[in-house]
Length: 107
Length: 114
Figure 1: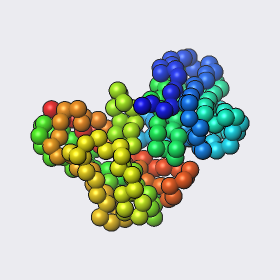
Figure 2 (figure 1 turned 90 degrees about the vertical axis):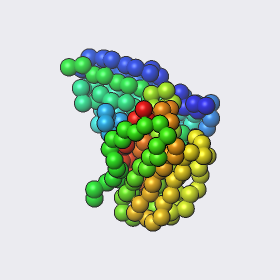
Figure 3 (figure 1 turned 180 degrees about the horizontal axis):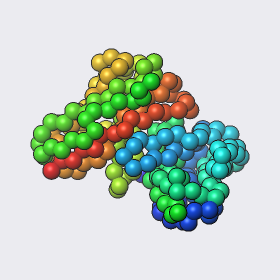
Figure 4 (figure 1 turned 135 degrees about the horizontal axis):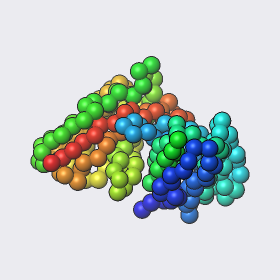
């Protein structure tokens, strides 16, 4: 059972465009994490959100945790080829992962 | 620090053979996790340890899978006998606490069972 549903599954955009990916669940999470994974490597933690409604920024990346703590979004401004990778959300202290959004940013 | 170390990086074996994957966590981390990643099922938690003791092995798919952590600096994941459907990338991760702290993943072992 996939408790965390991520959308879209695939996303291909041009450099400079903005994008938003989503992580949704019917369950309430005490915390939610976003990871980025590059080919041949393990996931790397980007951010942890713990408070409903929380917004965190990491350079061009903006993360939001839903008020009900059931969903989250990741917005990237002016995407760059270096942002290419698999973006994973995880709940329950990384016990449950979504299937991920595979992002490709073309130069 | 060298980070989480996994070996081998690639393993190709034949169905029925025993496979042992190895992990060295970051020194001082007291939680260790084993995950499996496939295209079909994504990243799944198999088992995790706290202070070398298995806490939750509910993700271990079958009795063919077993994991041990004989000391704070070493863990193994064993599959015996292996089957083609076990083909996946297996990751080990460690963290200082089991809460929302950063999990550090190793580079993974890509297992192919023919």
